Length: 126
Image 1 (cartoon, rainbow, N blue to C red):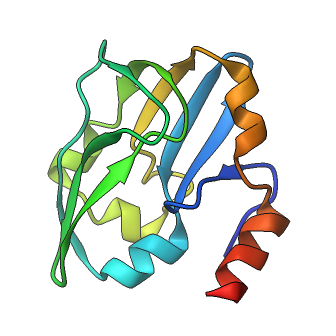
Image 2: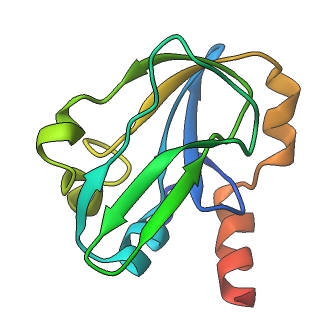
């Protein structure tokens, strides 16, 4: 399950860009590998982040893992629904399970991310 129209990082984050803002989350592949997610540490709105910088941690029944910002910019919104129901990431990782919105500082960074086809190839290489 790798939707077209999104960009992907090698760290298994996705971003959907609309103008100079992107909505991001973790991929279906990542949530599947983690198993049932029981907690997520959300980033703080207003925080400036760099591409590949840890945004927080996600805890599942199997592991605790960091997740990363796919781009540099300012966190403008977080999905507070995840505090009450982190399982939304498992149920709908590309929709209701989004994590944060980021105003892009350098749109050229998007060129370093993977298309859906490239991400499929990346996963196939293991």
